[in-house]
Length: 162
Image 1 (tube, rainbow, N blue to C red):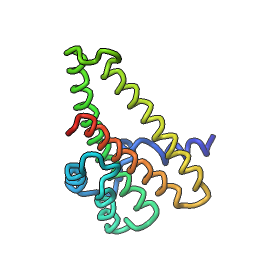
Image 2 (image 1 turned 135 degrees about the horizontal axis):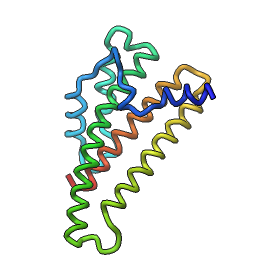
Image 3 (image 1 turned 90 degrees about the horizontal axis):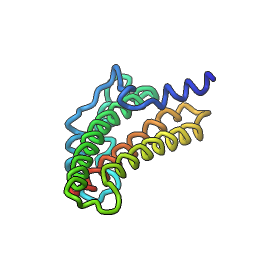
């Protein structure tokens, strides 16, 4: 039971695991998002904000690196939620206009997002488990959340053709 609680504490959602001591430049993340081309799998600038964060005193330790990555992930999560809301609004408009003849778009996206969250969390937990014997495990899990969250934010934006 203790091991399960420890894993849950390390892999908790980024919005609840923000760094207490380490900060990122949020504008770097926003600029990264805005400058990522449509169709990109991952932003070319992913990790820049957490990289700068790691230059702070203590930021190059395992805990510091992990917390800096979590702080950047929290910002990507804000963007992801905004993009989800914008995409849902576009889907609801299409549904109301009768453009969704076969399947309700907003319901489909809601279901997909719920499944994606479960997949992201399970996949990152599996990566943590693979590295459980080393201190790198927290960095691997944090980086997994960062990469997947940023990628999904881009996907949601691209669903609208923005």
